[in-house]
Image (cartoon, rainbow, N blue to C red; front, side):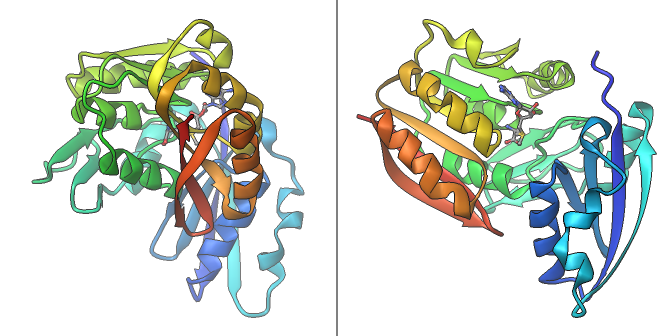
Length: 279
Ligand SMILES: C[S@@+](CC[C@H](N)C(=O)[O-])C[C@H]1O[C@@H](n2cnc3c(N)ncnc32)[C@H](O)[C@@H]1O
């Protein structure tokens, strides 16, 4: 099991918006990887390896006169992570159709009800990018389509793909903790068509899919789009997220180079999620 230690920052923000939104965007650029909005602001998490004591110096909104932002920070031992999530993890419902909740929440009366024990993995639907990828999946036909969920995190997207009739599905993550967490979530949601694998795009040699979903980050996507394109069947769909709206032209240019036509864009709080179709 990987032994990632996180640093957690608890920001208290007055007034809350748009400061929290801007703060999350700026923290995302400096390496913070997950955020939980609270009643008083936001709690942000960064891997200790990515952290340095002057990490907040680049965050411009902290110098703004318009908002008062204070913070405390602490190191999170892996064993405390569950308690952190249980404290902060509220269930979400996307477009009144798909609920994502923890095992300790009550069941929702929605068409799709996904149970996630997130632990250390990204992917509870709270992040804008996950939310938009859920919307893309809800809006498209997945019946009997072979699917790759690259950078699967908790495997929430792979699970929704199966609930929408996709098969077979590969869910791949480079992180051992996500791999183990995905195995648990796949079993917990009684999924029968998902294979969970630990690794990266090098696992994709000779693979072919009808749909590829990848919510990772700008640089990894720019590097791996050519591999995804080579694995997509003709007329196959590619859904990408994990980048800001400003990065959309860069991502679209790279896709165009590899015969992927831009089809649709979703935007949420400065984050983008794109759909492409293979020519
Ligand atoms: C932003 S999270 C997305 C998780 C989930 N798919 C979701 O939508 O909520 C990105 C995930 O990609 C994984 N990852 C990072 N680099 C990767 C790579 N090169 N190949 C595969 N997975 C990668 C991370 O471990 C992380 O779990």
